[in-house]
Image (cartoon, rainbow, N blue to C red; front, side, top):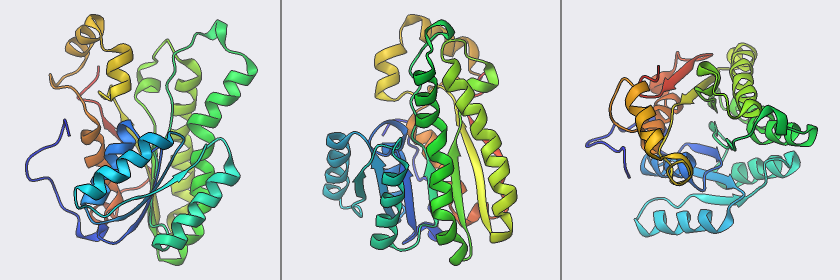
Length: 259
């Protein structure tokens, strides 16, 4: 996996822990699933891409890792999401770690946005994060706590001009994180937000990594190395583990120093 390092950290508290990841079939989500499996966690994940997700399960099982449990789910369907979380609980025990990773950053202009498109972008990038947190809350509370890790984006910090609905949704994830952290803190449920920079997933490379993109990385990142999904996964592992027991209501930016 590009972005991996020699002798990565091991988190004993994650071994055997029930983890639920949204959008786990590809990109950053695929790396999240693999990293949690390598920690010995019991992983369930949802995705709309069934073929890629099943291939991931086979690949990890063939590598001798604990096979994750894939559940096909369109996160715009909140009832289906709730059923998936219940299935994960029944299979692996109460969910102790929720990673709200799923999202989509399709490019668009203000002039092109319709009401239906706007609503769809918020469904894809924001709404399911709240309802997933709502669904796992009683499971975490009854187990004495847990960790919810939402996914934002640096796009709202830098004000990217080519996806206003996405930028709006990701900014709102920050507000959701702070509100949930305050409400759920007395139940020992931690809520944090990871803000990735420009991560070199297969989709990003295929669609947008051209000569202009290479120049932009060289000019705007403090660190010369490209970001890869594994770089994001390592931050998520820390926030999921007991090592981050006093971290909540925070934004954790992993962007190579994008300025």
